[in-house]
Image (cartoon, helix red, strand yellow):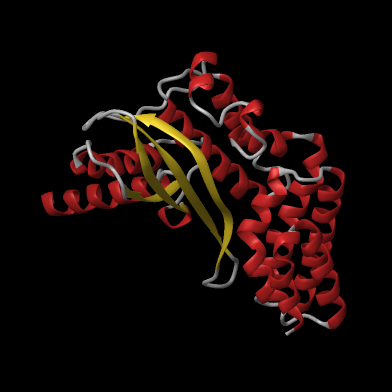
Length: 302
């Protein structure tokens, strides 16, 4: 009887862990190529602290199975050492999404944030407080958690990521003006390629067609290519046309650059198998959105 009860408890505990798994599956790498003062063990603990923060926090009210967690890679390169506990550098973040009916994972986000400054002491926990500010590191990590969630939800339902982009905006709103002035990346005046502009673009009415196109690209095109590749490519061409229109109405927008950073290689490989009309259209659209890499898109013709 005791053995049966123990087995039942184990099964129930396992079921609860599946039903209540957190949303993100984050792997962190920390590079410290030039640091002199800080103890390397500090960064070993920082890696673990970031993973705990991102992976153990409940970011939504939805129930995720373990297999549904969003795979995220973070590479934090610490290149500035202001003191033994204050640092600067850049953060590369990538996130992927599974494609229905296949083992392929499509990139959702591939972004490099060059405006990362933070303080950290060994064994210091990183904590999240909704609607209030703790420190710059927790704010940066929370911001990107919500951006990843928003992009993932947008790819599964039209504008499904709206609540999470609004949460990312709320993270910015909680940054004290003195902190924003001392730590770049939170203000429009800091440049046109920072966290402020990511969320500004995503919530802008001018970018609504972009977000609809993102849904079409993923749910209506990629997710059907396992059974109907021709229809999938046709829908994807139409989605890229809409993205190009957003680029024309909102030139030099950060969100278009983020799209091509994440998707350019995928698009090239998909349309190498397209018909001549599709190839010409995609080359035209992508070259307008990403002129610096025009030669890459010409390779679609083979």
